Each structure stands twice: as structure tokens, then as C-alpha cells.
Length: 101
Image (tube, rainbow, N blue to C red; front, side):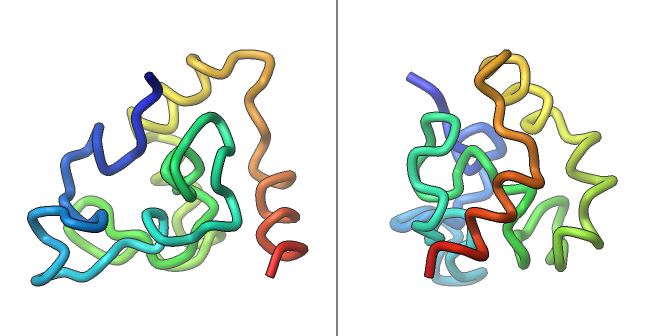
């Protein structure tokens, strides 16, 4: 079974997670517009295109602000490798975010 970012990174910001009450829910864990992308729950396997995710101890901001850090992330690399030819590029995912309300 494919793992979501919060499972791999252990941030605990998913529903019922260890840090949900203190840090709040992560937008990747709650944004349903990308549910199923790369086999993930909500945006759990496309976190790099979701604004306001909390990685490395701080809020990452918009896609443009976090792009460099996310492309260097071990989870981003894992998803790309696992998906292979089925990997959906960030531009396609961003379009999905805009078209699905």
C-alpha cells in the first residue's frame, strides 16, 4: 500500500495524529481535491502543490515559495519513483486544484 506524506514524514498533523491538537491539521491531509492522486488519501501524495503544508518545522507557503524545497524532499522523490510513468507533474496537479472546488 502506498503511504501518504504524513505516514512517511511522521508529522502527526493528519486527522487523529499526535500533533493535530497542538499544530492543527495539515492542508495536505484535509484537501480532498487531490484525493486519489498517486494513490493517496486527499493530497497525501501530492503535498508539494498544496499551500500551507508544514514541513521541516515551519509553514511552507505557496507552491511557488516551496517548490525548491519540495523537489529536494525524499518523499517527493519516493512518489516520483513509485509512480514512474504514471506520475502527474505539478502543473497538471495545480490545474486540478483550480478546477475542482
